[in-house]
Image (cartoon, rainbow, N blue to C red; front, side, top):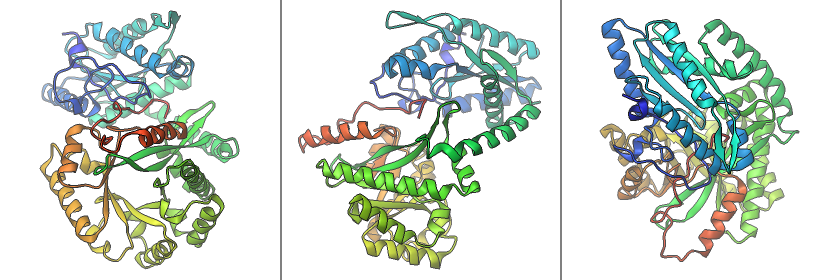
Length: 478
């Protein structure tokens, strides 16, 4: 069976409306661009493959396929053209007849597939070469031909991983090694090369991070928070991104720990706070006078003496009224030193700044400390929201958190909302606000400004949630 019938993907999208291929099954398990299944469903498929491999003592190969230089397509021709290239690549992969072989899209330009019971390493290598050939054919973009190549990483069960997540991660690591050494090739996972690469990359990133601020490589994106009663954008969360001219986009999960390790987190955190406040002040001057800006506090930033003084100075310098700034901290940070945390939070609240607890429910003693902390809102962690329509425990926890918050007079924000079913659940139980890819991905300042302008021109009885902007997934270069 061609693996068009067993494809999977997670998409990270564009600003343009995207065509959707016909597809079976619930929409929350499929990619809105290609119609392929998402990563969650792909992992479930691989669990079945792995179970069969264990039962029969057979092998299993995972291939992760990345289109080389795909970002240049988006940068040169626009995101809509990039989407068409991804659709074309998906069709080509679907036309390859590689038996009962699940395929996935793991990111903006990255696909993955599994081969059950390959005879040997060469079997997997042969498939990799076929994929490279089919993706090397020219793509038609705006009456022009563009040529791309593919880098492919391969991991084999059981020698290079016994769990699905490890196998996928190892195959991706092998793909990254290819991209680091010229692209347009394939490689099997090598743990020794992986360790060397990690050490080398750590040193490279550390050196580069010291120049990131001065060289204007750090940028803020903003993800809207939607009021479910009015359907309006009531605030945004500022999210930090690092775009390096040579290394590309570095994930916050990679550079934030490095910033904390090197002590650069203080300068970066201060820049984020000042930049976010200045941006919200600008929106207020444009007439969007009820916009709230949420800024995440790092552990080191929160524990550093003088946070309240820093916030006061930033608000004074930027001209933003304190009530339009919301500082977010996780349960873990707040509970490290409860007495110190309460003192700091009370000082901030006395200034008029709002306080939010992020990732609520993932820490400990959640219910006991809330009555002691001067908290205005809590954000239900996406791990619960992801399961509210499929997992009774997640649904029960979410209902309980919303009810508890209502009794305490605390607003509730659900993060990670990605489907209409999740939205309906949250509205039914009177969650106050939502944010997530069902509405908007993190967007640059100009896009937020356009959204706010459109919102201000909309009639009040046409709530945004009833007519949401077409689902905007997460672009591969964000």
